[in-house]
Image (cartoon, rainbow, N blue to C red; front, side, top):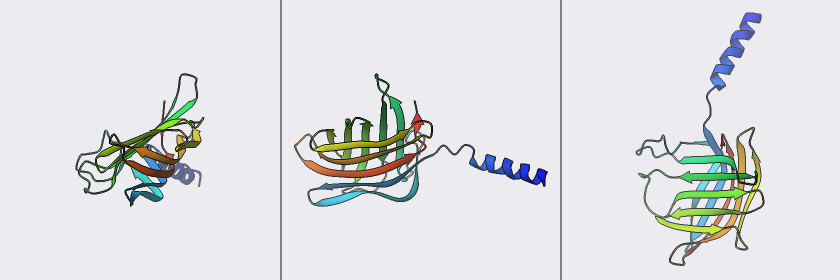
Length: 168
């Protein structure tokens, strides 16, 4: 019995070891010129590391890094992007946000090849409900109007939770 239990524990440890993949749940919605697009992660969805993914792999890529600013406060950088070979049309090519606990941060959304940006302000709420360094988990909530270089705007809402964030 004792040997069986030890073997079972060893197998469970082996099966769980090395699963350092990044996973996300939640959604991102972008509306521009009356057209909506986004990402919906109803279930825990693994994201590929952008540096390791093959260019022809059409799965979504992503990053989550929990770091610290000069004052020692948590700063979390989140990103989701499509592969270069994904289908064309109105879609989010890249979504990236840097969020801090005090409600400050920056948002960048590439929509159909056009980059839209905003910083946290009266028209851009970026919240960091939690970031747990010891567990590598973090969450971000966004309600923001972003603009491009030509003055075009888009409305972005997001509520995402990440597991497997890198910790610096």
